[in-house]
Length: 281
Image: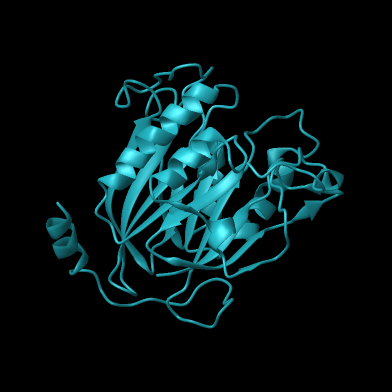
């Protein structure tokens, strides 16, 4: 399979326009972000209409983006606000538009899409809307395979959102994704997502035991120590906030790890902070 994929990749034009922040001044760096944008809930302290432009602008210069909790109209808003990116993702309830999405966006000037699919985190991963184990809701993993025209590397990106209540569901989802990565054959593997679990939890241990590395642990530099990601919108909640949003990698170096902190009227632009890294293929 990978031989065919590489043949497809070889047909792409070798053109890349530098986009995004330049942390290490190396042209091959990739800016990668995961961001739980919070579903459109009119009861939140900031409505989606108030914050959607800031959400998009905060991460619009990244090369690879994974969003969680995006309803279909929120995906549409992101597509309109990110004209330099292509995307893939489906609704978790029906495999089309219903329910929350975990879309992946990528900079079309650098990457070609080679393959895309969605798996449900359940015992029946190809059945749309299926609920796994002790989870309360359907959960998905969005999987895309990208050709990096800049480096010639093949990158597998998985974006996911684990159960918020089911420890068994999180652990078994981690085992399922570990098998996906074990069979990937890609040069670089990247897992993005809100895993609803802190470091050293069973699901993180399973993923790391399968060969992925927590970008926080292996980064050459971090913007601060003990970075939390779930704040509930409140800027005062960052101190002591749990780190439940993660980027895990294999096959590449992590030069920089940080969170993005955008504020409107005293509130963060989501109840989670976006987590970003500078990845060196």
